[in-house]
Image (cartoon, rainbow, N blue to C red):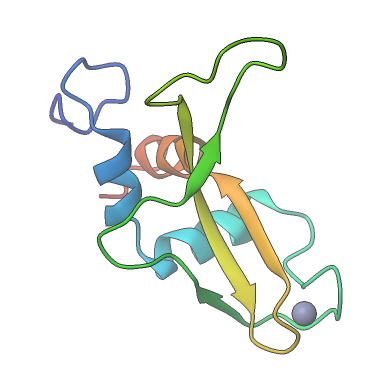
Length: 106
Ligand SMILES: [Zn+2]
């Protein structure tokens, strides 16, 4: 594992690592970690990666009672949409990346 793949390395780029995750990586994570692979809305099991190319999809955090922080802390997500009903599920990208690394996948 190189320093750029190690999430504890100062050189690690979580945004780039998230962008580099494939739909196959995400589906493998679901299969390994989730008890229910089906869509919680319609129970189908068919997903499409809805992340836009060359962008990071994530949650932005701001304090409840303070000034807005720019740039705001962001937590990258992997998001997939159900091919049957459009329900979107998101998972913290750091969890998918940690799982991938711990299973020797590149
Ligand atoms: Zn669905």
